[in-house]
Structures are given as C-alpha cells and as structure tokens.
Amino acid sequence: MFIDGKWVDARSGRTFDVTDPATGEVIGSVPDGDADDAHAAVTAADAAFGSWSTTTAHERADLLYRTWELLRSRSEELARLMTREQGKPLKASTAEVAYAGEFLRFYAEEATRVTGEWRPSARADQRFLVLRQPVGVAAMITPWNYPISMLTRKMAPALAAGCTLVLKPAESTPLCAKAVFELFEEAGVPAGVVNLVTAEQPAPIGDVFTSDRRVRKLTFTGSTEVGRRLAGRATSNLKRVSVELGGHAPFIVFPDADPVRAAKGAAALKFLNAGQACISPNRLYVSKEHEDAFLGTMVERVSRIRAGNGFDDGVGVGPLVNEAAVAKVADHVDDAVRKGADALVGGHRLVDEPYDRGHFYAPTLLSGVRDDMKIHHEETFGPVAPVITYDDVHDVIGLANDTDYGLAAYVYTNDLGTAFRALEGLRFGIIGVNDVNPTSASVPFGGMQDSGIGREGSHDGISEYLETKVAAFAL
Ligand code: NAD
Image 1 (cartoon, helix red, strand yellow):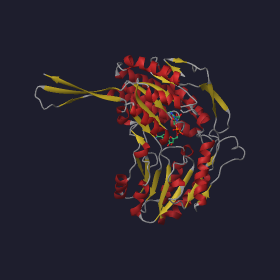
Image 2 (cartoon, helix red, strand yellow):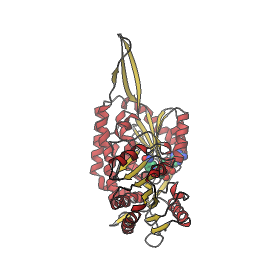
Image 3 (tube, helix red, strand yellow):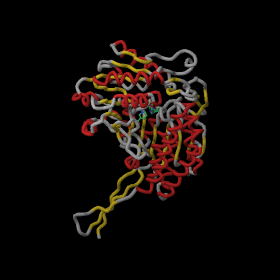
Image 4 (spheres, protein in one colour):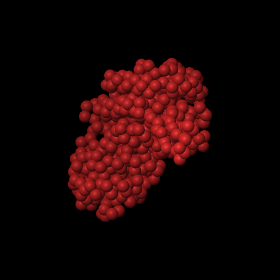
C-alpha cells in the first residue's frame, strides 16, 4: 500500500493473492488492509491537504503532465499487466491505457481553468466574488473492469482541483492500481497527497470512507447495490458523493437505419471487455423489417469472435472476472432459452482445454428475446447480445426507457429528426447516434436514475471536487 509517500505492509501483516482470470495462476500478492490502515491513509491525506491545496494550479498541472508522460512511456508494460490481471485482449488493454492517459492530460490542462466570477449586487456599494476551492480529502473506490482508466478518471480531476485522496481498488485488480501509484510517485507527488489501501474485504474500508469526518467526498464506481449503500451512508454524514453505477443500455435500430452498419457496430461494441462494461448494450431492439439483415450480419460477425487468453493473437473476448460472473451469464442465457429465445451463436460455457483453468463463456447471440426474460431487465455483464424484434416504431423509446438504469443508449438511424426525437426522449446520460464509442475525457460520463449521481470527465468532472464560496465586499 502507498501511505504518506511510503510503500507499506498492512498493519496486521496480512496479504492476499491476485490471480490471472484466464489461467487461475497466482500472479502476485498485496497487503490486506483493514480499517486501521484506511484511517492511517486518511490521516496522511488530511495532513497533506493544507499544503497541496495551496500549490499553484501550474504546479498541479505539471505533476499530472509528468504522470501522463510516464504512463505513455510505460504503456506496453501497463497493458501487459492489465491483460494478465484483468484478462482483456492486449489490444484492448493498450487502448485502455491510452484512454487512462487522456484523463491525466485533460485535467493537467483543466487545472489552470478553475476560475471565479464577479457577480452583480442589487446594492451600488456592494460587490460579490464567487470562488471555487477544493473540497478536501476525497475517498475513492474503483472497479476491476477498467482497472487503470477508472483510477485516472477520479484521481486526475481531484488532484487538479487541489484535493488529496485515498483510493481502494477492486480486490481482483490491485496490481494495476499499484502501477498507477508508482507513476505518481515517480512523477514526484508530495507525501500524503495520494494514498493507496488494498484490501480483500472492502466493507471495513468503505465504513471508514463513509464515516471518518476528515473525508469530505466519496466517489465510487461499481455496482448499483453497493453504490446505493455507500452513498446512503456517506450522505447521512453529509459528505459529497458521486457514484457511477450499473447500466442496461438499449441499442435501437430504427426502420430508417442501415441494418448491416448497425449490426457491425453492435458486434464490435457488445463484446468489448467480454461485455463487462457498464455502457455495454444489453437490449438490442431491431425493427421487424431489418430482423433478417441484422441477424444475418450479427451471426457472421459473432461466430468469428474467438474467446481465449488475452495474450493470444486473434482473441477478441477474454475471460470473465470470476466464476460467479460466468454463473450469472449462464443463468441469464438459460432462462432466456427456456422461455423461447434462440441461441443463434454460442449459448454455453467454455469448459474444455484450454478454457478449463479460467472463467470463460462463449460469445453468444440470442434472438427472440422478450420482456419476461431476466436478461431483459438485469445487467448481464457478459458476452451476450440479446436481440428483441419490435413492430411499432412508436413504442420503441418507451421500451428502451422501461428500466431503472439510465447510463448509455445507442440509436441507429439515417434520419436527423428520428435521431433528435430519440436523443430527447431517451432517459440516459450518454447516447451514441450511429456511434459505438460515445466516451472521451472531454465529455461528461455518468448516468441517471439507478445508474448514479454525478459526472466524470470534462469540466463537470472537476466540479465534483470543488466547493463554491462567496465573498461580499462593501465598498
Ligand atoms: P462492486 O460494486 O462489487 O465493486 C466495485 C468496488 O466496490 C470494488 O472496489 C469493491 O471492492 C468495492 N466494494 C464492494 N463492496 C463494498 C463495500 N461493502 N464497501 C466498500 N467497497 C465495496 O462491482 P464490480 O463487480 O466490481 O463491478 C461491476 C459493476 O460496476 C457493474 O454493475 C458495472 O455496471 C459497474 N460499473 C460502472 C461503471 C460506471 O462508470 N458507471 C464503470 C465500471 C463498472
């Protein structure tokens, strides 16, 4: 763990192992921190806040630029570590490292753009000044599915704003987190400004983050269930929170769309990170007249996707994170097939050699999915594309909105009016129009309803770490 500028063991002396999800091999071990370690990390972050928050924006920007340069110079090494620890294909890991770097660069630039304002007064002898200042110590909890970019997406804006921080990464990907902290250390971050606590049991750390009065902000990315609980506790202690949670993205192919283009987009998007992405489409609504063309292209594309170890050439889908994830995917597919869906491709676990030591599920295409099936309502988080055929275009926005989630949605159409009506009618925070890559460091990322509170990336992302203060001057 990295506390107060030093690499330290857990106070208890305990450690836990990290395994490769493709082979089951133990690839390292890290300190197993507990509440005492979390308190020590908060103490270090609190002590460092006074000096870090009064550095100039230029000094903070310089640190982020240096970290970005180091990340770029190690991108191959970081990508290999990610494939080993998390399982995604090496090409996808390389892309994630570059995406992670974008947050460092963007917030290096954004650090110098935190400004105030003069505001008018009703009194001629009064002037108002509005200032933005860092909130204080930020506590961060990150997931395993994007084990480097989810860290920089939180750390970079917090540091740019002048906050100090304590971060707890997911228990299955602590080695990637350690590598990110090594970059900051090498870039010269002052002691106590960034602190890393690894733990096999997350709950005691979450308790400290949500109750220690020195923590002023909690930011969490993970499941809706855990995020709801943590946000509830943190807000009851009047901390600021942002939570990026689950999703159940609709992907709508309108009657005026090109079904082949849409199918190519869906096949490329759905299987990224083996479907373990919160913005992965989980309901593909295809209008009746495009069913054959869409499914034909999907069958051809999905059949070609090879599952396997992310280090092997030509592998498009890596392992799932653990056995529970494989069981959930199998449960969703089996339930759908039992209720009448057709598995046009895949539809089963991969259990024979060389898959037997890892957590693999075959890339799967389901047709004939209906709303009485689990997959229609619950987040699958796996490599399954469920296709729902619809008859009436007037119903489809309502069908897409029929979920408690509200993170990402995708629409395919060749009509600007249809695109605008969909954009305005869909209750989702991120919408791709004929586009399967609707994210960037420069735009806000986040959801509505059960998908979360707050935004990351862009100018909105740094606002999450800033307090507003007003000063009135009598002349
Ligand atoms: P998870 O909620 O189990 O874990 C996320 C993080 O929370 C991990 O670091 C974990 O250790 C920690 N955690 C779990 N229980 C905790 C507790 N009681 N106290 C404190 N921390 C606790 O989810 P996951 O399985 O890691 O990730 C999958 C989920 O995350 C999916 O639902 C996915 O949609 C969501 N996700 C959302 C986004 C987003 O930006 N919206 C990004 C990635 C993943």
